[in-house]
Amino acid sequence: MTEMFANLSLGFGVALTLKNIALCFVGCLVGTLIGVLPGVGPIATIAMLLPITFGLDPVGALIMLAGIYYGAQYGGSTTAILVNIPGEATAVVTTLDGHQMAKQGRAGVALGTAAIGSFVAGCFATLIIAALGAPLTKLALLFGPAEYFSLMVMGLCFAVVLARGSILKAFCMIMLGLLLSTVGTDLETGQERMTFGFPPLSDGIDFAVLAMGVFGFAEVLRNLENPETRDVVRTKIGRLLPSWEDIKQSIAPCLRGTFIGGTLGILPGNGAVLGPFASYTIEKKLAKDPSRFGRGAIEGVAGPESANNAGAQTAFIPLLTLGIPPNAVMALMVGAMTIHGIIPGPQVMTKNPDLFWGMIASMWIGNLMLLIINLPLVGVWVKLLQVPYRLMFPAILIFCSIGIYSVNNQPVDVAFTALFGLFGYLLIKLGFEPAPMLLGFVLGKLMEEKLRQALIISRGSFMTFIERPISAGLLLVAVAILVIALLPSMSKKRDEVFTE
Image 1 (tube, rainbow, N blue to C red):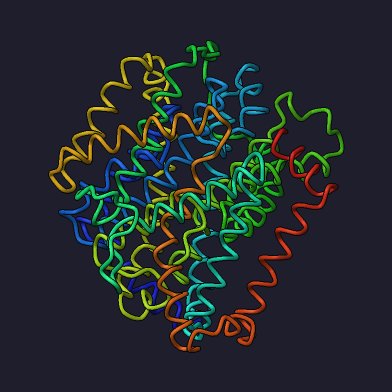
Image 2: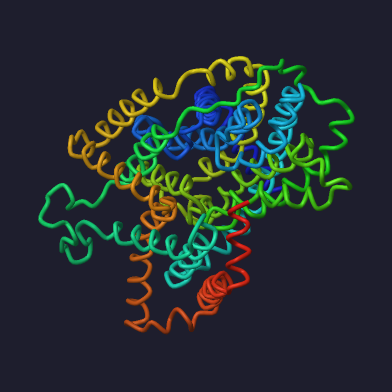
């Protein structure tokens, strides 16, 4: 415990510099903005801003990018409550009761409850990261190449099961991501793989190009085909601070939501998205009068919003301690760390303690900033919601193109991004979720490296993955996850959950 407080004091020393406070504020503000404006999302925004971080030090860059991610969770609730459109996938549940509260003239109370719940959950989740960081890092230091390979296989199995829609489609997306990661020159043999003799592909597919195309350009194309229907609340927002009665009704859902979201956020494969849904289901089952839900129950806002923000922050645990990104946004963070010469994994805490603890401390500061940003600026966000999307999307495409060109100063990168944008749009239309593909792409090179290392150590014997107890256990969990998910009864329940 003493060691943890000493580390946190180091973290606050890093996070409380003027530069890092400013970057944290910019990240939180941009995150809230893109959460408020549906159709952009943190994945596309972080992909767009990756080139800007080249001129920053690694700590400042990651503090800003992290602020964008958890800031978007706050902003997503604003549109969910006021416009009945979730700014983020995790804010879908908030529309059910939050918008009904707004229609009843309690928009301010709903917004205040969401912000306070998110703040409390964020603070608790940051404590969980601080508490679990050191033990998990020590455990990860026991891992060899075989264990790392098995861990990544387990993570991808979780991604398949937790992805929206068909398990087969999610599996195909993972495999496509792994295939794309092998394009380029093999570092060990020097042979070019799947480049088709095209020189720009000899260095492989650029991570920012793929991410920006599949999430940035494709998202714009998808939103352009949707008619703009906004059920904007016309009544007054009213007071923002909940009454004592509202607080009493919200405390238990907020704590339960924090626990549920924080636990699911650690799971690889985007478990954080399920947090708000699980919280809402539990609150409805525990309620004395379940019929209130869907008609403006404050518990239906407090629980899911707490779960939402707790999951967003504990998602950093597998990234910072094991080097395994649990979702597409964390995959982008891996890309950002790699760009700055930092190898994600257990050595981050020992080799870059200022980065590790500085990021954790910045989350506390960021949560406080978001509380200040969200509540007083509600009027500004309402005005922004009235801007037609057709005016915003050309600006988004221009910024994307400038950002991609500035990475390598190669016009061909912009062309590749456009192609991946069309490809991503086609995937969405065919019912494929692109996020597992990005996860497979990020983990692909690392998996290949660990597979080769393990086979070299074992002199080519694949039995090394079964003979080592931790590796065998992780592979067993991976197989069990897939088998359970493919059982007809479980498959039906899974489909029902995602449909709801």
